[in-house]
Image (cartoon, rainbow, N blue to C red; front, side, top):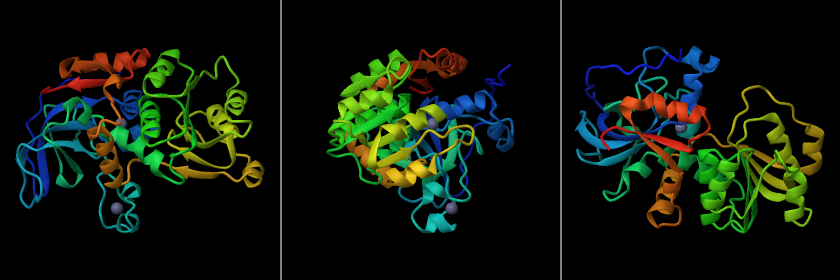
Length: 335
Ligand SMILES: [Zn+2]
Ligand SMILES: [Zn+2]
């Protein structure tokens, strides 16, 4: 029993500062799978019933009082972090680390629905000709762009993307577009590796059949990569990626392991990597950069849309992910 149910609910009305979207597409992602599996941290956090869905795009069809800069008919994507704007991180331009973040689809009703009401403050307005199915992928793509832009960036460097789920594949494309010298993609799943190649990886490695660290040293003159973008969420994957990083390199962690992992601090002191957390998107810097990459054709996310499933068949989209068949399934609502 997975607890998913399609229900008729009242059409929501926007209050002051809020907008309502007529939802077009919504992406199913790893976070939704954690909810599906009722991971303890979701069970602690969520009050049921809750409409899921945070990778959402739609057309504004009602605007609440006091909303400025967004009008009826605008095509918007949603930032998924509803930040308070008043805590210390928010005031220091770190809204992605807000102390009081609320999340559509977890803390408030989300976009696996015909209509969704959200604060206007999380709406990103796309140009009218922006492809709607890509609009639903701006939120995860923004994480990949955020990862490529932190620290030393990626331009002219050797980059390892370790873990090629949707965000990893998006990171491959973004790193390539932003001028990485080499983009090495690693994943245990050959289907994902084939996608990584299609998204522009210069080398694809399967740690199930090859020694990742050895192969990477062979590709990098025995030095290791300059940058790691780590998404495996697994302790072994994280350690291998650290070993594949050159001395003094830049390690960016997106995929959070579900349990505390051990880290050899002696090795860290000796080899001096910078270890950064990549959480969500820089608001709105990552959005601006992500939108530019797509608008000027430097990144095409279309190959990542593996399935488009009508909202009524949402359960099927979850099943496709469970079966390992889907890269990014989108639910089509008012396609
Ligand atoms: Zn997501
Ligand atoms: Zn805040």
